[in-house]
Structures are given as structure tokens and as C-alpha cells.
Image (tube, rainbow over all chains, first blue to last red):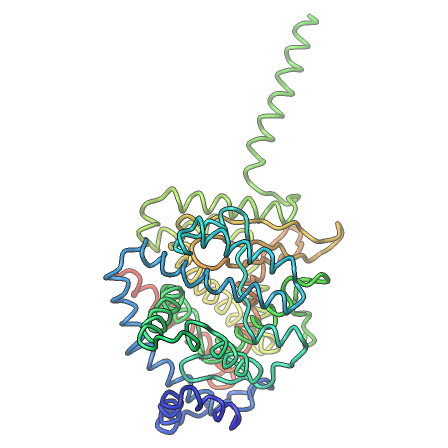
Length: 253
Length: 213
């Protein structure tokens, strides 16, 4: 934990400090009677960061995204989405290569070629209707494919659900991201990052409300969903891929 | 005389053809699980896309559609039982019935909300990987539209009344798994009765919130 905080501070000192301050203020604890989860030994800490993120979302990010939806017509928002999606596909192609999935990597590279040229620099996604499937890979998944265990569950300030492996993955993602850390023009870089955050939140604008309605305890809902989803993403596309079926044969019956 | 017989033969065979064509629309007990999912999903999507009321977010109308077209092919009792795990035995038969009803309503509301956002998406049905004598199968689909593709898998079991869906996987997350801890936590805090009350309250809130739009 200390380690990731240290690593984080290099790049995002202020952000982390803000998050830590929020943790100190909120200091949420596990509701009484809740069974501790074996995946989540740092639950009290994680719950405070979760509360901080929820507050940030309710009072800052979601209202901003509501404005974004009000101001920009849908085709523009879609163009922005497609642009960042196309940019991400280039990284996904590299990750699939690193993960030993050359067929996926080739598919992703073709997507970038098609969308960047005929899709006007990525603003239109012609590859998906053309039959080139969209994938999404990151450093955390790549490390997972290489056999790095997930480690305990962690909720990161701003980034939300994660685990120890994916925290390193997120740092590596940011470090290797051209638009986030390599591009020389800082002002442009910051504007692009802002737009990306808004775009990312916009993709699950409605789904977020549905989740709020469906959740009994949003914290553990998101945690259990995250753990399952990452497992699924890491096993995705393997040759021996069997549907990951949890065994529900109830030993208690 | 002979031509008469032939006429009736033709009539009989064409009647059989027609009736089988009609019945092919509605799945029955003998329908294979992947065919069942394909029929239900195709029908529901067509109904949603054809109805401007649903597109505008008329939730009661969608709930009605889901109740009629989807719920008959699900086994919500099994879903609830699996999500409850060992706590299922702690609930009285009345509580069990209440839990099934309330959990079903919560899921229907959530699912209806998702359906109301359906626009130009298409569903890709993947080939079924199962042995003919399997009692449990997973039917895999992918919803393709704006944004990232959403893998949506259905877990079915073979019952006396045909195949029934009892669990769903959305983007890698099994529904039952995602509710297990939530149910267990609520029960350890407030007991089975507490969970029933919580679900009742939530469903009431969702019903009023949606009708206000």
C-alpha cells in the first residue's frame, strides 16, 4: 500500500494528497455484522476511498458530464468516444501481442488502420460494423496473463476499483500513455485528459444510475463485480477457454 | 375418388406445415437452449425497437413486455436460492416466496431500464458448446452497438418444463455471484426479514422514481 502511494506521488502528488485527506475525513468503517471478504483485507480503508470517489462523482464529475451531454449533440459525443477508442486500440494491439495473441493483435491493428484512414482519424468506427471486433486490454490484464496474481482488492482515489497488480498496471498505463504523459504540449495534454475523463464517465452515464438502483450495498457489489470481471478479462480469448462457471451446487442443501 | 384423397393429403400436410411454422415462433419444452435464447432475444429486441413509447422510457410498458416475453423462460426461484446460499434455509417459506418476488421485481426493473436504452444495437449469438445430454449450459452472446461490445451470457438448466434461465453474465460478472455477498451482508446485519424489507423499500422507491419522469 505504502509502495503504491509512493509511486503515485511522483506523478500525481496533489491528487493523492487530496485522496488521503478525504480518507482521513471520511474514515468509513465496515458496517457492523458484515463478514470480511478474503479478497479485501483493507476494507475499512477501501470503503473510505470509495466514499470519497462517490462524493466526487455525485458533486463534480456527474454534473459536468450532464452538462457535456446537454451541450454536445450525440454525434459529436460519439465522435469523441470513437477517437479515444481508436487511440486505445493501438495500445490494445500491443498488449495482445505481449499477451501472445497475435490474431487479436492483428485484428486490433487492422481496426486502427481502417478507422484512422477511412474513419477520418478515428472519429467514425467503421471497423466494428465491418466485422473487426473491438477488444480492450491494459497493463494490469497483461500482467495477469503473465501470471502475476491480483493481490488484495484496493479502491484507488479517482480511479476506483483495483487491486495491487492493477494499481501497478494503472501507473504503467499512465506512464506509457502518449496523450497523458509523453506529449510535449502540457496545456493541450491537460485539456485532452479532461475530455477523456468526461468521455469515460459519459459511456456509463445511464448504466451508473441502473447500478445504483440494483445495488443493495454498492461497495461490495462493485468489489465482487470487479474481481469477477478482471478474472474474466484475463482468461478471455484463451484457446482452452471454458465458460467460467461458478459452482452453485450448494453444499448446505 | 382418388383425386379427393390426394386433395386431403395435400391439405393435411400443408396444415401441418403451417402449424409448425406458427409454433416455431414460440419456444416450447423441446426447444434447444441456444435456439430459445435467440428467439426470445430477437423477439424482445424487435418489440423494443418497434415501440416509440418504450424508446421514450415508458418503464411500465417495458416491465409488462419483460413479464410476458422473458419471465416465462426464467427460474427466479433458483436464482434467488443460489444468491441466498446457506441463508436460504434460514428463511421461512413465506419469506422465501417474498424474496423471490422482490428480487424478481428488482431484476426486472434493472433489466427494463437497460432495455429502454436499446437503439441500434445488434446481438451476436455464439455457437453453443455443450454435449447433447448436458443439464446445464451457458449460451453466449455479445451486444454490439455504440461503445464497447457487451458480452452477455445466459446460464440455463433443463427442467421438466424446458430450458430455464437462472443466471446471467454481464461483461464477465455473474449476477448470482454479484448478489451473494450483498445478501449475506444484509442478512447478517438485519436478518432475513431485514433483507425482505430492504428489497420491498427499494422496489417502491424505484417504482415512484420512474413514474415521476
